[in-house]
Amino acid sequence: MAQPLEGLTAIVTGAGRGLGRAEALELARLGARVVVNDYGQPGRDGSGEATAGPAEDVAAEIRAAGGQAVAHLGDVADHEQAGALVQLAIATFGRLDILVNNAGILRDRMVFSMTEDEWDSVIRVHLKGHFNTTHFAAVHWRERSKAAGAPVHGRIINTSSEAFLAGSAGQPNYAAAKGGIVGLTTSTALALAKYGVTANAICPRARTRMTEDVFAGFEEPEDGGLDALAPEHVAPLVGYLAAPAAAGVNGQLLVVHGGMVAIAERPRIAAKFDTAKEVFSFEELDGLLTPYYAERPPNETFAAAEVLGLKHG
Image (cartoon, rainbow, N blue to C red; front, side):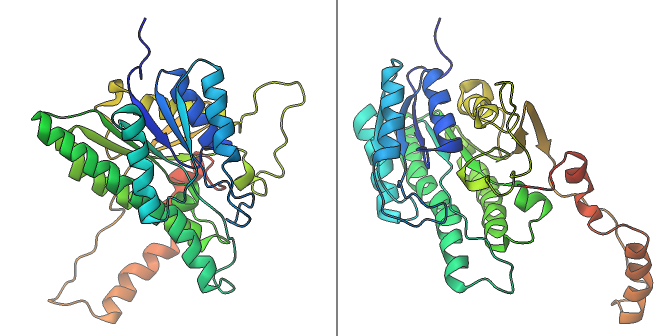
């Protein structure tokens, strides 16, 4: 019986550890040939010497299980290196079909303490890194579709965060980058749909090197059972979104963790006020908006996120 991703080629960025590793292994288990990308820096803030070790280890694990995989040591936030990553997939396996953007770093700080470098570095790796690989993959799919005169199988799965959905006081750079990724995803979904390409974003919650502080109070089960925060809870959704079965899922944001998938709605208008005259006056706005917000709890806009338990991440 054919596997859902048999014959397809995938790139997973940041796949040397944590979520990316689990996603790469799942795609390979479903039959995909995988290019395992990881810059290999030991620090979650992007510090330390880059090494091919993490990517090579995951690629070797896939091959040992009977799959096909190659490793790529490269910084996806560098435009040229991101292009080389896509070209490696094409040169090695003949084409690219799936792009999973997962690479990221953390440099947490309150907004009043954050340095320019801490802001720029996080935006660079997360948001520019997502754009770079998306750009080169989109060029490849557009050219293939035009040459074939028909849509192709193209899948982009981007990684956003609950920090964008519900806020995260100490992560203004990370939250902004993850919000930008959602905007990039929806724009890409509209631009590439006619070529057969879908683009979706996930907000995963998982215990990884990146989130060890966030989940410090949530201990792993002592009975040896699967941790509710294990990355293995996230990987199956990535595998599904990469498959032909998900052709009708495009431009969506999905929250996933611990055996749960929630589909986020786009923002809706909560209330609407019209001026009684030609232009609003300060007094009129004060009379309308001040009592409206006084009757509502703070951050009611994110009440749905709180119901889902999305206050952290």
